[in-house]
Amino acid sequence: MMKSKADEEDFWHSSKCKPFTFDDEDDEFSKLKESKQTVNNIRPLVDEDEDDDDVEKVSWSGEPVGSISWSVRETAASNQRTDREPTLPKSSTDTPAISRSLSGYSLSALFKGKTRGGNFQSFTDSLSDSSARLYAPELRKPKSEYKDFVSDWSPEETVHRMQQGKAVSLEKFRSLQDKLFLLDFAVSANDGNVITAVLIYLKRTLSKEVLFRELQSRQMALRHFIHYLTEIRDQRLLLELFRSLPRPLLQYKEHLSIADENKRRDFLKSCLNLPFSPEDSAHVQDHYTLLERQIIIEATDRQAERGGKVEIFQKFPRRASILNMPLITTLYYCCFYHYPESEGTYSSPLNIRQTFRISEKQYFVTALAARAKVKAWLDVDALFACRNWLGFTRKKSPLSFQRVVDILQKNSAPMQVLQEYVGLVDDSDLRISLAQKHKCHDIVINTYRDMKDRQLLLGYLPKVERGSVEEKKINELLNNLQIRWKN
Image (cartoon, rainbow, N blue to C red; front, side, top):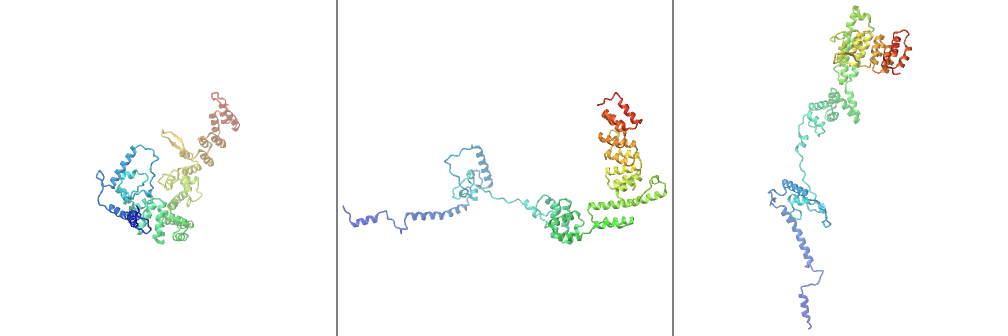
């Protein structure tokens, strides 16, 4: 049966399916877009409401979720579970690791136990996720670390902390007294870096006149400051420093132009107050003391020599005055003319040795030469006498006995004295050489005997005089059947 045209029109217009038109805005796709946009607009509001939620979330133990104690407990529990569970091989069906940018973790979500999407997640679950990286909040530095900049350290404590390499501020030392205290403590610490750092601060905060004036009495700081200016090549300031400083050494050398010994002594006494270095100051002090002592000794010996009652001056007349002589020459003079005197007198050699801190070796050489010159061989032997802990006396010398033999030979020592000290040489070859040089035949013969060398003894026989005691001694040794000769 054929439908009428009106029925067909009603059928098509009453159908639930509508034809597609470009101008239709009520289609399903448009509705889907609108619903998704509406959800996206509502989500920040929901998240914001959840973030601002005043409800406090607590764990089973009653501790607030996200607190530090809760985080520590959860971390320890996670580590224990990890240690107990065996490591399983990863299967091929494992999901790929989520990158850090897509992990969905935030700092607030980490301590509240949820992700950005709104789903709650435990702290242990977040720790078990190897792809998630946890960020702990940065803690404030302890107040003790800020103490270096705010505490009122004394100059001594400041120098001590500078030696330890800690940061300190020198700006609080504003008065001249505090700055000088700081410099003095730095010098007493004997730390060149600390001294230089303090000097740089003083150079910046003090005037040149004040700084130069204070450095004159602080020689160590002055040397460091000169070295610092040399390193930075500040020639202008270095020249001004040199011009401002007095020249004590040049002033000290003026004593050479003073002929009168009393005036020279007074001049040296005035030089003691000049700003010398410790080494130079000790030298000037010794020079003054030596000249003062020389004046006293010279006056006494001159009077004794004119009186003609002292034997040593009659036997060995003085050839020159002792005034202005060096220290070792003065010691030699006193060992020559005043050796037996007690230590309490100015001219005693022992007093001079103690006053001017002369070493044992230098004193021994000088005294040996002086007493050998006087031919006082008993005094020479007394210089070598030494007792051991058993009470036995033996000869001991701070010099080698080879040097002793040379000194005695230059002073025309008798053969008996030379032979005694040649025999004290330890090395046999050197002992034989010295004995042959000084014709100490007994030493050579006894050494060859101890070596039991018959050939050497036979070879030495022509070197001694015929009919002498040495020749008879050699023949007796050669004919002695009790000696087992090597050859």
